[in-house]
Image (cartoon, rainbow, N blue to C red):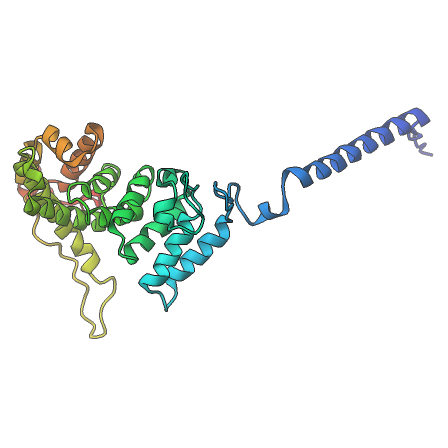
Length: 313
């Protein structure tokens, strides 16, 4: 007959120790909950930190951003509504000494503090200033967005559109900054247009950089035409059943354009455009790399086909 071993029973001391540990844990959790009520306010659940802008009015960023965006995007949007949206955003800035709350925010607020505003508010303010026909103010807001150009092609393009109303060469700065990182079709279109405008306005002749600007302009236009093929080609057959055109256009004159690009004087371009040398060099190298090679420049061994890779498309 099998015998069962007696299970060890907890002594009174062990039970008391376990209960003490449980009570201590419950006390720590309760203390953390009470502490969180003071460290994390209820509005942090739906409003990010720093929602209140600096200034005597202490406007709530979430409300200002919602109201300004609605005025710009609503079907009844107008220059007057854009001006109201711009005033709401600028009123978040601190007042200048001797100015009153009722004065025009564009003149009574410290515009040098624009760089400290969130990117979303600055982007909305830039579009509002353009809609309200305030080119000088739009250019000032575009300059304050400089640190966001590299990571936001849309803001870089919008900043260029605002700066072109003031200076053709200055409008090239955000385009070269984003080109140093990646090649985008809308950026290439704007880059070619801005370069042509700088040549026509005579701003590029100040440092005798006409030939260099022309070389970069030809490259930008050529790359834009080449990439336009991908945007203009249908993904599927049309209603008539015609096949999708998959034949690429004739190859670009990559060799000639590369030689002209390498011959460009970067020092003169740096003085005219105002972009730092490293950014300009990276942008020109990326443009040269995007040109690829002509079919007659590719060495093909006998008996093999000339196949183009994904990077060449």
